[in-house]
Length: 114
Length: 114
Image 1 (cartoon, rainbow over the protein chains, first blue to last red):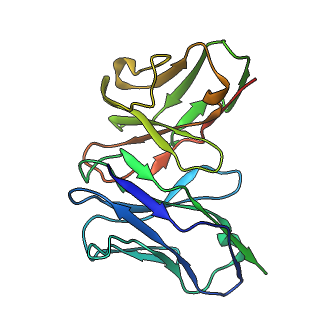
Image 2: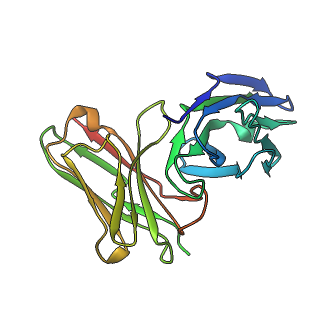
């Protein structure tokens, strides 16, 4: 079946450091790919998405490129802030690409220190 | 647009009791999804509705779980004879048909089974 694998956390960085959180997937067909963020004490928020190969999703300085050849969707940010501390989830659409039925990774905790 | 709301936000119950959660989606959204998130894990799909029809149920949804969406508006998720393993955050999300991913999640209902 379809699945998502994320790098294990926690990831601890100093402010203004470069961030990469790795995400790889296994899927049949052509799923859409997503990154979600969960700030402490808050609900799940969609951060960015890409719906086809080579698409780049971006939002709030975060970027991820849909790489079909490596089945990856790594999240990057050039300069992290303390306010980026949160849990990040990679996800893919299960079945049709235009669906809310998603498979999530286990999450990666990011801690940014001043 | 007041977003997706869920009630209650927290529920503590004793093993063997029945509990019911409610989700109010964004009014014009015809799809409604239920997910479960246990501590340290990503959300897992449980079921979804298009209007009042329940279109898919996960194998995670045992016979003790039932969900309804009468009249295609709010939805309820009932768990009968709760077990300690049911302790989790239950998330609701809504969307329009044909949209990739889920942008609008509710705040969740945290269930603790003693």
